[in-house]
Length: 333
Image 1 (cartoon, rainbow, N blue to C red):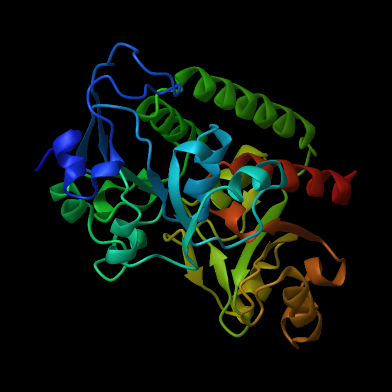
Image 2: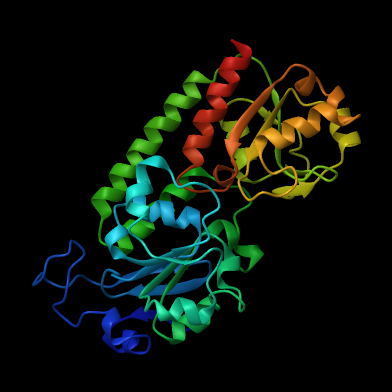
């Protein structure tokens, strides 16, 4: 495999302005600091070697963007793309400082026009040939590209289930790459504290079965085994009504769902505007459909709403735990 590196020569392949030479800006933005040792990591089977903290990073979808902004890296970002939901309130002012390269994924030319010295996405689709280009191709230009372990191009490398530890490790990787390890440790410590609080609060003393409903009406996309919804259900002492489905997300049918009759339906609130995307559109469908309207959860208004982006592993995963925890408390206490 080809080693991915950042250095003066590599950056010249993209743009002369993309990198500083030896003795340039350090990770804290000061000059004259001693150069750090190269950071070497493996991301979804490809090695990354980063010789200096990136200064012109591009995030290729919202979850990667929000991790970077949470780590205080707005001033190191040359661009962002593919926002699917309103950015978290506490990050909006920093987000507004970062150029938006495309409504969805920028093409390879648009990406390279930003002169990136690092690219980051939590979705493999960002690195499709008709999107930003493959990580291998970016490597040939001296631009390392990090991909979340939850969505590797090679599915054999994807862990069998999502874990919070893996999410926190990814935050730590990005913090290490940018030389902000202390900030990364602080962020992760706060996330762990919030997780513990939500878990304790959600002890409702009953084995509640949840159905996670992402999108669609006639053929609803529901959460199966191994994804973040499955992890959250187990973490909170509840259960996933469809944990026997071997895929993280699968197309369901209302007759099967009716036979399972889940206790609570967790609704993804999506802002993209498709049929049945918003939480309110899902509720309207569930209450009007001849089969879905007979579900116990629907008849008893047992709904919990979570932003759609929070159902994928990200900095929002802990917020999703908190929202489901509070929802269970409201419904069963």
